[in-house]
Image 1 (cartoon, rainbow, N blue to C red):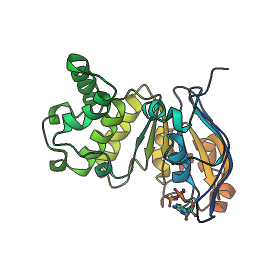
Image 2: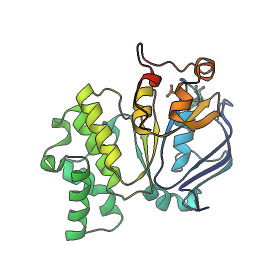
Image 3: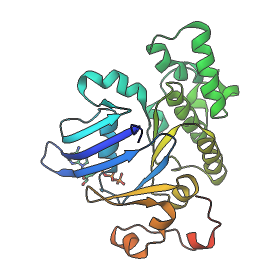
Length: 250
Ligand SMILES: Nc1ncnc2c1ncn2[C@@H]1O[C@H](COP(=O)(O)OP(=O)(O)OP(=O)(O)O)[C@@H](O)[C@H]1O
């Protein structure tokens, strides 16, 4: 078996106020997988994501990315390997142009000149935003800014792309376009979402985190059609959406 891209073992974490948010989480994601992380509000999803690149540390258990443990000493390399796209693109876009925002990370890695330009161009092409390179990010629509935020992370050539609620606040066309982009990428994806149809559309596998533990890990179709599991963990499909009535693509 190859080394997982993401290897979380027995991760337990309590916040400084004593609130225990994770109770021994195990999660293994292999290269090329697209995995959805589902779960009700307060389940611990964000807490888990913040451990993946060392924003939160100090809990029990371990997290490794392609064999490299997430430790304070490894954080710079871990942050290159784990690209997190946060829910609000404005948390990630702070430069005067789209190009400068996408160049920021690779320039910090030491890329310069033609190599840097090519990296930026490729990342913008991957998200269909190359023609916006010279625009200020704050002149773009929310959906366009989210795509640029994805490009800022892709420009680092991460081992795993972690997306927090990628479909939130997108209109139906932007939501579909982002799905097409994510499907086209040759990258391992972990996607936190409450948008269950989006999980079904994009991720063959889903894990359900509830009360700080993983309560299910299997095919997204099997998870979403397990009525007892769904109701036990406050997961609800949109009215009228029935995975059983869809062609089985994932
Ligand atoms: N800084 C903090 N200090 C104390 N407790 C916290 C802190 N941040 C989160 N928590 C608690 O930890 C638990 C897990 O929170 P977390 O944000 O990881 O959940 P989540 O699954 O991402 O929820 P949501 O779907 O609402 O985003 C919750 O009970 C939350 O109240």
